[in-house]
Image 1: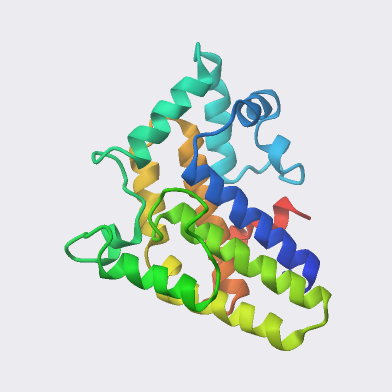
Image 2: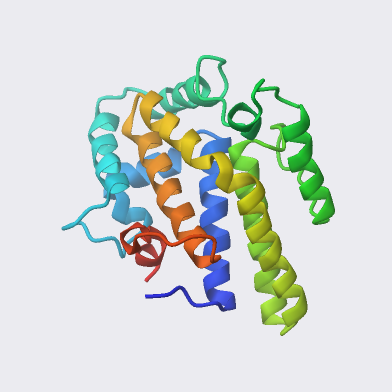
Length: 231
């Protein structure tokens, strides 16, 4: 099955990028933790097949058991988020860490990402205090590009929608697609709870589907988690 190239599909892609961006930029909210505790993965993606769970669904199931033993789930996950994404001993989810040999935060790699945002005429500095090359920021940027593509398709502005799609391909090729996999694999190795292992696995599967959708590479159809999740 192929993801349709229409405003609805593009809107779904936008929502998924934004959902994942938020999970890397901020700890999970009390509402999200309660939702997972009550319904597991299908509470987020009702179309998922519980009889044949994907790896990220299995991690969510693990987390649902872990959360029962937490006296303060919100506080525990805030600490987990800090340990993974803020402290130097964690993952450091910045493109510069994985692409720059000297791992210079704020250096040439970070500035190259910032220039891409500027050239696309998309303001990202007000989103949060994170550097432009933070994984959550790069995912949010892709969400905004999808949002523009959706808007232009609804207005039947085919030229502008194609420009937005081309920017998505270029950003995936030059930035996000060059390092996100390695970062997510490190998250899976360092996460203390199933929650962030599930986030990393879902991100990997979604980005693999995106690369196929954008025509950047061929991937196994089993990785098309987003298509199944929104069917």
